[in-house]
Length: 178
Image 1 (cartoon, helix red, strand yellow):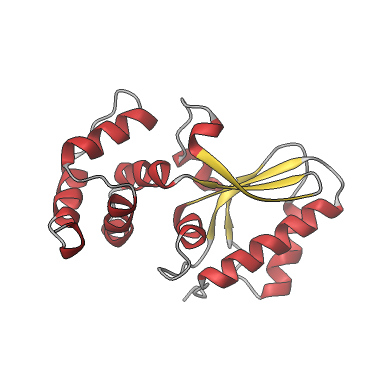
Image 2 (cartoon, rainbow, N blue to C red):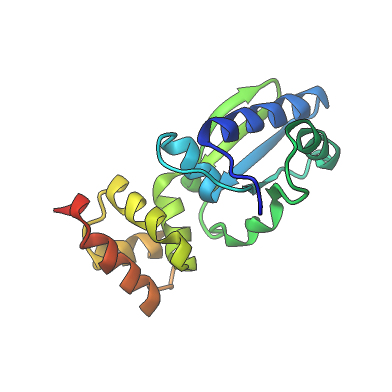
């Protein structure tokens, strides 16, 4: 079973990665989405088993990722760069990400809460239900129509799937929205 990472550990591990990348003396960016970004947003809320994100192309980051993995005793797939395919690509990076910290020429970015919500709505997995409920409340989205409008902002032309509508309706019926 993959190791659960607390929000504090996620922050420390990402700080370690930024330090490793800074030592390479090359300008680059680290982009974080998914559960790790939610952990950075609300440290009291959740743990995660990996970091979904990617590192800018200006540097060969794999040795740095591996050193961090060994130092922290993480699973081989702790840094899931395949997650990049789920990030909105038709809007600018500034609309999706906010800088969290900078060290030297390396900047760590996390997805904005509304962009995270859009990504979670696209996935609409059962395991995303708590994240969807949290992000709906955090973004003050109070209807299926508002959720659909938000999705369209990040994924133009897409609409909520039937499963996503059900997830939004379930979340909106929870006590935190009353």
